[in-house]
Amino acid sequence: MSVVLEARLYKHGYIATLTKARKAHFCLECGDLIPPPMQYYTVTIGGGGLGSTKFPDRVCTRCIDDHMATRKRF
Image (cartoon, rainbow, N blue to C red; front, side, top):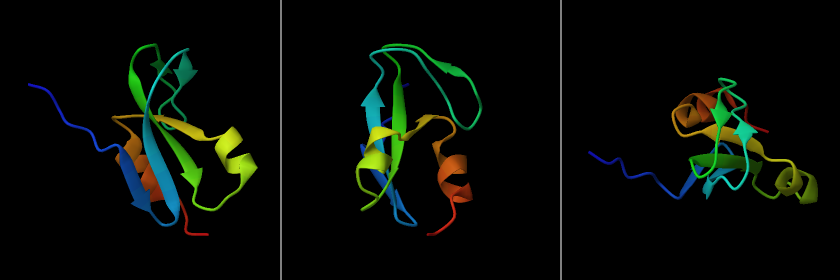
């Protein structure tokens, strides 16, 4: 059974975009390794400028709901 993931999630002014890993990253929420070619979410601040897009939060697909729920509104 395959799970369909949403390409973009919007919550509290944050934007989570589904991305395919080209190199290994660590999940910010659980600390697990995200190896290539696994999919993960990059979380940026909507209208946050270059700093937000250059250094996004990288979160695995299992932890995205918890991560978006704990983000504070700015």
